[in-house]
Amino acid sequence: MSSLLAVLTGVLVGSLVNVFVNFEGRYKPLIKWYFTLYYQNARSIFTTAGLGLIFYIVYTKYGTGFCSLSYMILTAILFAASIKDIQNRIIPNKLIVLGLILGVILNCLFFSFGRIADSLTTFVLAGGILLSISFVSKGGLGIGDAKLIACTGMLLGAQKTISVMIISFLASALFGVFSVLFKKLNRKSAMAFAPFVLFGVVLTIITG
Image: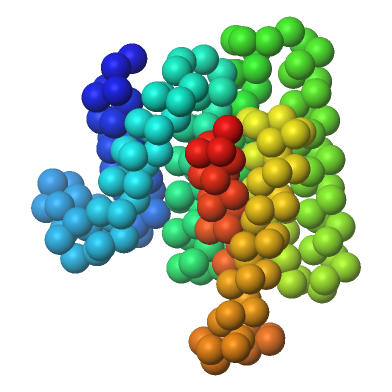
């Protein structure tokens, strides 16, 4: 895979993400509807360009293999989850199922059964920790967020998932504090957590 192919793959995946998050279940003239996404929605341009850039960084930094593919799959899922979380405060279960299935397939292709078991254990533990926090906080952290972290654990493994969790919580806490200080939010405002998980993963990609 060349750098150009990595970028083009990211752009293609970004386009598919845009179709997923914007499709409303009503059939329209496909080509016209697709280009309208970019004409009327700057977010669609950001998603496509962002995934193209991330795929390029992943390829140039990690080459090909399990690490690169897991990062690429996870960032695509997180882009879609972030948009849905911002729009509706909902993370679709189909994204979590997709991440789990692709995570199992990647582990089967690259690793032994023991490594697959470790990934599944991380999936359960990471999701369980966040699920416990969700119940303790009485909805302060959504169940969908717990499932998203579990998906991250399946694809990245324990060590990187811990880093992502720490970065995500710190970033969301700082954002919340500044939003309250500048009166953009109040203390009871709901806040989408998926974008902070995406931020944590991207920062982990960059810092390696």
